Image 1 (tube, protein in one colour):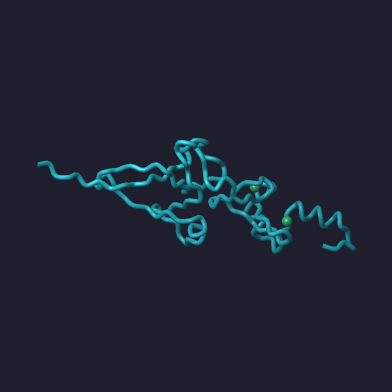
Image 2 (tube, protein in one colour):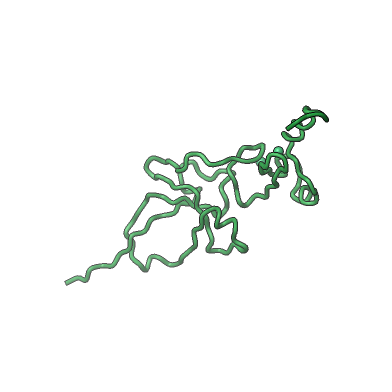
Length: 149
Ligand SMILES: [Zn+2]
Ligand SMILES: [Zn+2]
């Protein structure tokens, strides 16, 4: 008699480029989507392991190694739907956070800004002791000297 084959149930993570909609500018290089696509596979077809972090955990990693990834969206393969449908957006470009891109915090409104969206470089903002975004600068100027917050 044939022995029962051992198989394990796997749930696939998708790379942005493998999902409908594809890779977007705000997707991190090491971003994965947790899909609802499950398969039975032979254990020997699993050849390596990786660490999938939450975005928060990923941000707090001191060193990102080859096995580190992060996941903030789940992906319904049949419906091509992402959860959550909306995530917070930042900067004048109003894009979700991409951990691969440097951002600087505005002292006034605490929004996070990509220097290049203001035609600045990371080096330029890093030497600034105070950073205030263009919106807040404008608001401050229009309020004048007697202006109250
Ligand atoms: Zn931006
Ligand atoms: Zn601001």
